[in-house]
Length: 257
Image 1: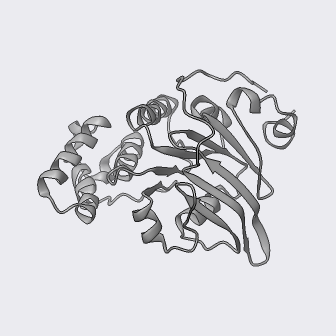
Image 2: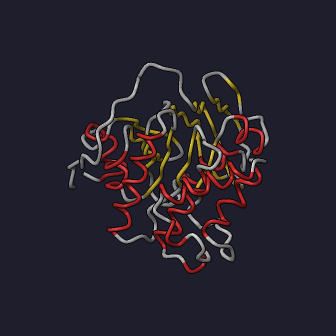
């Protein structure tokens, strides 16, 4: 196994602080088959967190439980320290605690232009047309989408669609953003572009916490402050990239001996 960890960026963040998101003893089953089992996970403010697991290991299920799309069988989720959110409906927890989500499959309005995809969401959040226009221009600029601002989303490249999806998730200035299999079906060149964008999110938005999943571990090792390995419904290890690739249990369960 290649255990080299690429130093894609170096940034320090404070430790020993209250987590932006705390998942405590979460379990979820489908038709009697357990997918998540007493899962525990802490996400620190301002950190990039990688979630690794085999296909079907429960990564998307975990995201849906965090969002409130799925109700856990047991366990609790807290945001901003001690605020219990696992009993809140999806709209309330996402609005009150600023949680955004970019799913693996596109959720773009494919018949609308790039700028209208952003403005359409912004209009649900903001009443000031000037602020809506400013937000749209800022995000189009930040994600290098100005030249395709009036192009219909269905005509965008895969990389442009992914950038637009992330840009839309930032309209509400979230505290937490969940990125599900964000590198799926992208070319190596575009993957590096998306990695740089994610790093820039951390440096430009100091309090933004990121949880990103992928089944290709090198992408996660490149980016993350902390890597969490999901196996048999549990987080079996949470360590820095350079440490987790050396961990005997993580190597046996996920990386391979």
